[in-house]
Image (cartoon, rainbow, N blue to C red; front, side, top):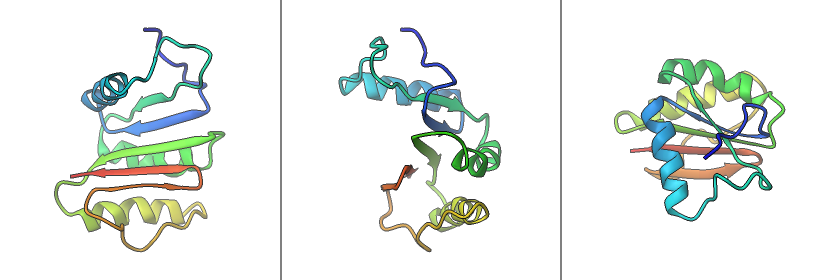
Length: 118
């Protein structure tokens, strides 16, 4: 499978290497064809840690992406994790709700996808 290029207009920020592999295999399992270069394939960006992901998040929000996704662990202190994402989004003019709508929160905000995985 040729990896999507870093120049893809679809970007998914994840915390680490395990998350990169998990997302890729989960998408394959559900029929996503990573070998099809005729579709827009997301670049799954390994941030290295949740701290580095949180630093990259506001920059990516202002980036040239058509779609931006975030997958972060929230198995402890869901409210705190959400507040971290929300505060960084607000810092660049993107407003997210004050609280997530559900425990496992998955939702599209315009061009932003957020998954807080318990």
